[in-house]
Image (cartoon, rainbow over all chains, first blue to last red; front, side, top):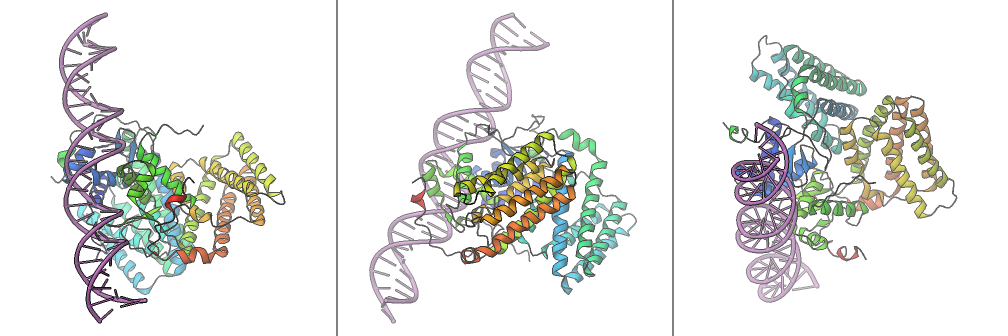
Amino acid sequence: MDGKMEDNSLAQIAYEHIKVRICDGQFPMGHKMSETQLARDTQVSRTPVRIALARLEAEGFLTWEANRGYRVTVFSIEDVRAIYGVRAILEAEAVRLSGRRGLSAVLVRELTELTRQMEEIVYIPDHSAEQRAWFLKMNHRFHRQIYDNCGNEFLLRQIASTADLPLALRNFFSFSAEQLTESHAAHVNILAALTSGEADRAAGLMREHIWAARDRMSVKKTKRAGSQARRVPMSRGKRILVPAKERAGIRKESEG
Amino acid sequence: MDGKMEDNSLAQIAYEHIKVRICDGQFPMGHKMSETQLARDTQVSRTPVRIALARLEAEGFLTWEANRGYRVTVFSIEDVRAIYGVRAILEAEAVRLSGRRGLSAVLVRELTELTRQMEEIVYIPDHSAEQRAWFLKMNHRFHRQIYDNCGNEFLLRQIASTADLPLALRNFFSFSAEQLTESHAAHVNILAALTSGEADRAAGLMREHIWAARDRMSVKKTKRAGSQARRVPMSRGKRILVPAKERAGIRKESEG
DNA sequence: TTAACCATAATTGTATTCAAAATTTCCAAT
DNA sequence: ATTGGAAATTTTGAATACAATTATGGTTAA
């Protein structure tokens, strides 16, 4: 169902394991990624862990420093804005291409169904955290379904690599009820534009939809993100300035 | 002058070494990257080579297959078109942002100087291959100078990662005199739009400039690229179908 | 108390070793 | 000659060993 062929390689397992923990926020920004520690946690040797770390570094999740190892990349609030800016143009383009190609009947049905499910949650006065999480899951699928139809595999790859980067941050920002409503409304409009063949308009709506998410993020918790983020690494070999000495207290809380 | 701080790590050296050889075309698309072979060539152990390969894989240069190692990613002509499509929107956005921020006097002077140097070559009736190479170098700087001013470090990173990908292919396509002229004219227009504060127009011109490069590529050597490219990998774990048995004949021609 | 310095420990960078999988080679059978 | 298959070789995946650098901790002196 998942289309995932068996990845027996420990490097792959370590990669996914670590990536999830970064996106979860279990490894916060600036966190020192100890190779030995990770190897012990995963019950493998350092070799596959190193492969995984190298890949995550190339993808921007980690930042490397000579003889000092890897850290979770520190994104300032400006960085996140910048990432959302890129996401906006990439995903708007994906929507445009997808719209130009035309949506199949089954795809429209799936998107409609997803929208309906999200709407259900939106109209629940006091939705639970679980329901909000479900909304986010549906939201993710909605976007992805549209993008997957765009026919530009490389664009998809770029989107995938940018969409996950600020994921760790997103955990800090809770969605309010109005934001869910707003988001849902945007989805409805985008879907309407797509089904009526207005690819360019759909693209513009998607761009604004992502801009809205960006702005939502900027106004809310500037304190939290701003205090932790000191420096923009984002390129190999640059120094990053982070508190140092925050090693303890994270290793044991995994899988509590 | 290069701003490169000492990278003693063998992994880093191997990374750059291999990447250059991929972009050079010394390692053609689909080429099997033997860890042992590379290790012997570089006079280091397999360990740093593996790190380098993992990074290059994450960046899209290489494609990995379980128990079968790495290969140079095979791009079909459609892939290259797709990449140029993404480049167009990314670099147009960089131009727009750069224009909105405004260009400093010194930057304008530098861009003007670069344009002048390129113009010189354009107006030489029979320019040498060396001069064409110089044009390409200036061209690259021109683009880069504009982008670097955009203020979105993440966008720059994305551009850097996409711009190099089809570099190997670009070696197959020789620039004709008219194409140089066309390219130069576009630069002049873009620079004019930027200096007159028309950021959006500059962005549009850049988009078309890159589209022109894309189309130039599509019409020329479809045979060459089409015959070598069989399948679009571009995502980890997918199978790629390449001739197989093309190992010999490459190892010895390096550093002849 | 603080600063400096040396010793110790821990971590990273690299090489080597070993096992498992894949490729190649070679031989036999059709 | 071609095909099939089994042994041999090569290559990848992973673990371990070792060297070099960095972090830590404690002792001493001001």
